[in-house]
Image (tube, rainbow, N blue to C red; front, side, top):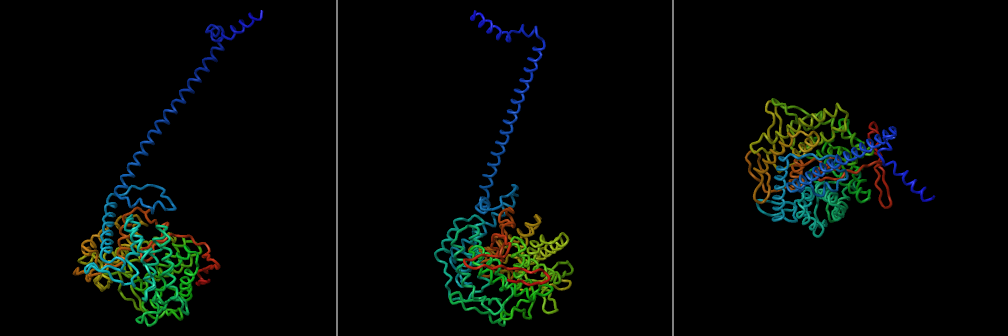
Length: 573
């Protein structure tokens, strides 16, 4: 009985597999059909998605492989661009921009020029301040501090010349000695040596450069021990005796006294010791206390009273970099309110600069006059050709109308500076130019010592506008240097840009500034980005570090620099 029930139950289960069961029950047949169709559509949809994903993955893999091949090809062509600068960047590039092959070619030509200049220095003047290429010997123009070597450190690093950089680093670590019985220029030593060492530290992270920067800066500090805080301009590196040169009548020079802020503030930020920042910001505080309405200061400052002495006002020699550093300290502090006072002083000075601008006839070249009392002199130094780059860099801090006005001024001045070069037989600029009615520009002092200022401005204008015209102008100037200044044993200046007669000096700033700015003119904007770096007046890039309170902490002391509002017009610390 139980066995029959079990067999009956089994037969009942298998009836659902019998087609006849559904033919007698059409509703159940319809449900089965719907379930079958739904399952088929589901499976088909999943398979389609899988195939689509497989196709997309295959395409992405192909694109990745293509990008890898392109990257390897670019590295093989210009591997220096992919060196450790970009790998240390705190802000990775948001997009990859295809490079112009012509830029790559030109950059390599500039790099070749640097290798030639550096190799000549290594062979004939190693450890000396500068090379005399024609006589094949070194000279100690700055007391035997290895000025060319230190000036060139960051250029070597940026160009990816690792072996040369390491040999220079070993010399700095093992041979460089600042205990010299030599009366050094505080200004030149700061911008070349302190700036060069700090830049090498910021780029490489090697603390030997920071230690050496601290050593030399400590030797310079006694120069600020004056009644006003305005420094003397020369100091004995071994004994600490400071003074001003006799030819200034005991006065300090504006540019020499107001062009240490970037380096000393950077050193305080990197060491945590506020004493360096304190002395250089005291200078700006003193000068701002009697700052004129037009923001223009004469080139001589009395170090006892801190007031200006009657002398020339100029954006050329002995005045230039004071105005440059007002802007760049603001940039160095990441444009925060803590450094706004520098920007306000600079803006006032730019209104003053506008009052010095005139046009030549008949070609309407814009130029910056010099001023003595109420008299204007229609003369402009090539040194003043840093101004277009400064104006372009500062234009972004204005509102739209003023920004366009100052950028246009920068572009017109750059055209004038370029024509300083194009107007001579050698296509190299003289040291200064005079403007006379109906004659446009005429060379005054006719030597060329491989200066960088015009190229510096072309670099800034190209970076900030993207206009490739500035690259073309820079390339033309580079070709003129190659034609007139390159010799078998290095690079030399010209005694006369009209005749092309050569001198016997390869200036250290040719490696520090001229070749660096030319190289960057043909490099991607991510290489030493202006968002992350600020250049000192010797073209040494220092990392931008935001300042919020102006406070730098030492072991046992703190200092806060408070900048008053514009109407009060004074710094208070």
